[in-house]
Image 1 (cartoon, rainbow, N blue to C red):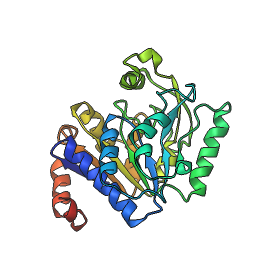
Image 2: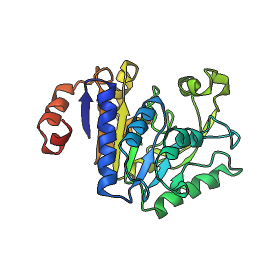
Image 3: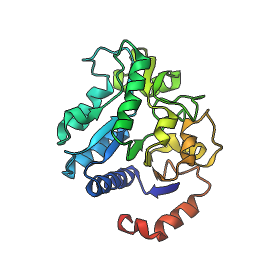
Image 4: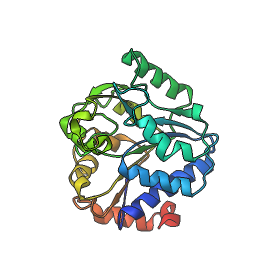
Length: 258
């Protein structure tokens, strides 16, 4: 794992966008794992502005709400269309999200796993981290070996996501289909982005704490090619900050990004 601290959220977002641009430029048929959230909107805006060719890419989102009508604006499909897909040249048929509207959620989850596998697996997975420590919607006690499945959302997660539903937590669905922790760990590369003081405690637990199902993001410690990009506020409780900064300042692979 590599932890990179940037001066502020804008610099952290810019670095993530540059990393993703590099992956797609190097591999035009890149299979992207995508995430949602306010911070991700800034990443997508930068990718759009860079005019990257996504025409041969495929994408798989981490999760989707269960129980919303297909036209509901709260769906992550709508979010992705609004903030990213409609603004780039990716083929709509190559953009995938779990089917939270399916009658048979277990079958929909299995089909999603099969589709990822038939696409050759995810090359680079973009991640956020929830204040409860989740990646995707893998809430506390999610198995590190878990696969795509339906999960009940914690009150903390629903409150965190209420902004997307007009601020009314009661309108936030109580369940979602999500890639499992095990599914996420199978991506060839992970890039986790976290900004703001509110994420400092959970970032420290995920990066430096014990690997535990109570903090599903701690499983990223097991991945051989994981990058954690944070701003100073989110890095505030990291004990190894001085060493992480030294690595970023001295490793040749980061020279073009410094």
